[in-house]
Amino acid sequence: MACRCQAGPPWEEVAGVQSPSAPARPGWGASVGCLEVTEPWDLRPWKGTRVQTPAGAQEKTEARRGTGTCPESHGELQLSARYGPVFTVYLGSRPVVILSGYEAVKEALVDQAEAFSGRGKVATLEKTFNQHGIFFANGDRWKYLRKFTTLSLRNLGMGKKEGEEQIQEEAHCLVEALQNTQGSLLDPSLLLSQAVSNVTCILLFGSRFDYEDEKFRAVVLAAAGTLKEISTSWGQLCEMFSGPLYYLSDILRYLSAPHSRLTDHLSTLATFVSGQIQQHQEKLEPQAPVRDFVDDFLVKMGQEEKASGSGHTDFLLTTVNLLFAGTATVSATLKYAFLLLLKYPEVQDRIQEELSRELGRERAPSLEDRGRLPYTDAFLHEVQRFLALLPMGVPRALTKPTSFRGYDLPQGIEVFPLLGSVLHDPEFFERPEEFDPSRFLDADGRFKKNEAFLPFSLGKRICLGEGLARTELFLFFTTILQNFSLESPSPPGALSLRPAISGFANIPPTFQLRFRPR
Image (cartoon, helix red, strand yellow):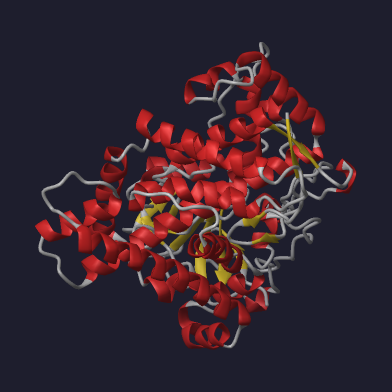
């Protein structure tokens, strides 16, 4: 099954288009691997205003291929090299606009932020969320949820010293759990997910959970499982059959094992959140100080007399959104960081030397230390760039008719800002296919920013947990490397950096390691 691709606007018919070269390796480029250009007789123009195709859109140049070990496959770069930074593909019969590279993405999401602030479809989750919750709502309802959630989490300590101290305490709990493994081989996924999730749970529910708590284990596994299932080839197939083929999409969903697994994962998350809300409702004292996000939302709903309807649905699903994102994304990035340290042991040595020199073995790392640890900071940035966790970005939708780079785009059309193409843009990252932390260091060894480093997206839909995620990555990572050396049972050359699954997200491969106390 191939989606159709054409240069420029979706309504302009293209003739004589040839399929680009097949991707060399799976990765974020494989996310657009289904965007195979079909024969011209299968290209049906979408009815709309005709505009002139931009210069360069019809070029037949091939994308540059690297020789490094980057997880992405350059599949999308081949399309953008052929059609330019703005082009259209068809997901089944559904036209979507693709933005490739930093300049196009920044111009859309920042320079025309309001127009590109709508949320597009994620077919695998569409029926569950039905445009409810902060991730999937649109219009005034989304603006209200965004404003309330941002203010509430800030008031509860996100981005403040109080929040940093909570992360430090959880990092200490994680160190104790890793010490109890006594250097045995393990897959770090579960413990990392539990530690990261506890930081989110403290904000949402006012308490952390023991790593041995079976319900809590089920929740963090459900969050990871959700990210995995929506990233599979089944998830991409659902995208292909959304839109006009809506009922066929239903058949694909309900007859598939991935659908059953995804439904179970989402049910686990929703049941857990519902239980927490119920407990808070039973103990709520409206005049007492707010303890957490759930308390804050319950009080707000009571003040606005939203006893039923979409208010409750948005509340429940916003909390599910935050729990899922706060668990699955940071833990996946930490896991990939550890894999890269096993692949490149000399990098681990350099980071630990920097930590020992600047912090010693006793004092716990803090955010104030980031400036004293430029190589460690550069490494964490390069991990996020190299992995490109959400390579396709989360789809946007135009909130109004918009003129963009000479195209008259209609209201409602979906737009994919390819974050993978930004993080691997050769105009901003020399040899982007190579893993190289030094790209974030200047000639004097100080940390150097790069404007194209955008793992959290841009504009009005930028990840509201960016600051929290960056803090978690830094504190969990430095605390673990201060206390442990990571050892692999396999030689570095035998370790693959290729994502286990590449679609909506790049899912790091499974591996085992030992945490040896230093």
